[in-house]
Length: 227
Length: 103
Image (tube, rainbow over all chains, first blue to last red; front, side, top):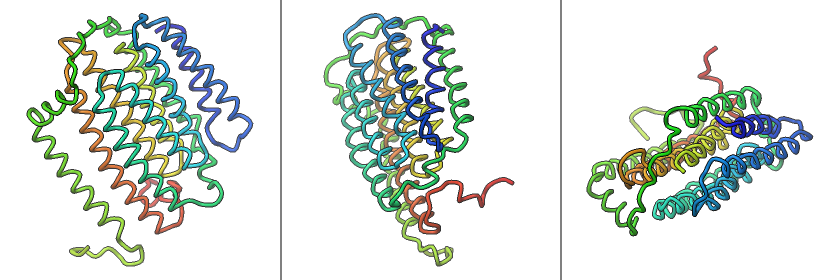
């Protein structure tokens, strides 16, 4: 593993720990600065490790936006802003998917996640919103342990990625044909037709289950056989 | 290019994991699981686009579509549970629900 990546991991872990909400308003800014430094290290590592090729700029930009949004999701004190930063993360991931010639998946991601799932999240946040940030939003639970666990996990994964035999660059795949939507749709409706129907069943079950759970009144005990 | 995408997927997954461990708000915790899903989606599509052997295929994208559907089902059920819990006690603090905790 290269020194730049190790520097990136260490800077990122320390910055994330400092940026966590925890009643230390002073250190959050220092944590964000450290995270910005980690992002600069990541750019340096990317330009060092990756051969210059078309699309590299889009990848680096999308990755940085995605990582920034992800960090803000888990460090912001207000849940509404966390959800909105998650929308930014979705858009960045969709850009990366377009870069990987997965246009249909990118469109589906934006429509389903940013359009449907996140709206539901924001509805629930608004429903449970309090006027001022709640104490449980201002204090993270064991930020040191959490950051340490994530750092160790990432260390192991990056070590495997860049140290093992997989570091050998795979052959660059030939450009796939145009018409990804057609290919994906054909694959979906021939090879994976059973899985598609199972997913439909799963969504129906989740719909019924969500309605059954959410309409139960808290005062009355759950009666068996009804509801 | 595959390594870069896989590393990005790992980063998003780990950020989601750290958020899930450290945040107390139930809704933020579920947002963090969605963030882990994003890392996995990037992984799946990257492995389909830049395969280690053979030619690029669309199976990764198909798997990612299934993953999105499962994530939608999970979000619906999780939010229904959150609404139910919030009706019981007007808080979203995960620490308020320790009834099932191992002593």
